[in-house]
Image (cartoon, rainbow, N blue to C red):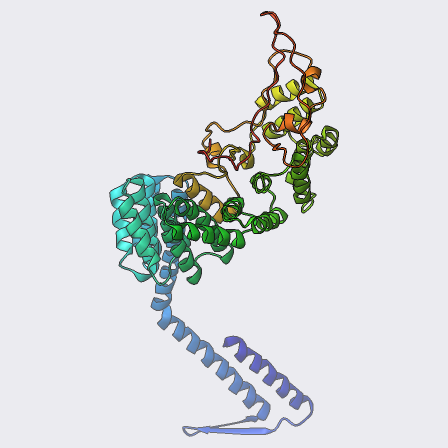
Length: 517
């Protein structure tokens, strides 16, 4: 205001100076209370402007004096607000540092200072009690939050966590259900309910929860789709074991839907293909596996694909597997399958050529076993023993060790399915629960002679495919090879037997199913 007045005075003074210089000063007379003053117009203008400026200054001083108490109150409030913000900041930092005593002291101080943010004070009080290990105070603080609509979700989460830590599962679930029923809910409530249903093996309840989560936009459509596929696959084995034909048909329907939702989810595809093959729909099962191989090759897929037909020679079986590998030739599983099908066909030289691309990879028990079988098929027992020895110390592959060629792939218990569903829904990763628990898994390493012995008499002219896969040949189309000559007499006791046995880790899945190892 004062600056504006000064600007007007300066402008007026310039105008008066210009008039005076121009020789037209003008006349002005002022009569007031019997007094008369005659002066030039320029002088009158300057006096008027000066008086106006003085009046403005006096008025502003008067207003400043009148507003001093209010201004002082605002200043004190601002100082208090700054102090409250500082105390709250330090309190949350103390909670983050797990300094319970300091956090509680700052929470009590914030309750006196932060009158404008009572919500933050309550949150800090609850977190401070948690950090201090005072469960009763924390529960009281979280319970107090339930009285405020904007804080009910945070209160429910805190109460759920306290109940879970105390081992009160039902109470924790009740808080999660109450939080999920709120108009504005959070993903943690949905997640807690989903884990509870998975733990109980309630696949149908979990499917309903996934559908409601998508409708309420609690989870993304991608996570929901993966969860649905895994849950459908998890519910199929129970229905398949039911004596009711309708339940068996429902198992096939669910497995097929799981394969359709997520072609890269091997358990669903393998289960659907097996059920289709049992119903005589071998061609449809083969197409399902081929589509899955294009999306995400997995060892279980080619094993299931191999066992769709059991009335074929090794050569024909190898041709079918070669066609499967050609659907996704650049993938690691396709390169491994190329080695496998060459061994089945009795072509060790082609198998060695296909295995060249695997030499540069980090060694695992699976690849070591593959190289050992390849070396034995090539008549190199010493090389085979070397790979077997290296494979004993090599790490397992999770995607391989969950398969039992003597039984059914992915023959999981409900707890294993729960872990598999949870991991696949969140990350799209196919985990192996038993391997995570460090339980004993199958080995890819063949059983070779313990001592050094020449394997030439054992190999002879025999079909290498039947050596590597002793049960893979049924002799339907091709004439089987001539039986080898009678073995030589038994050696003296101090000599090692010249008997070489390979692992039966590649037996057909079409045999009578047994529980997975």
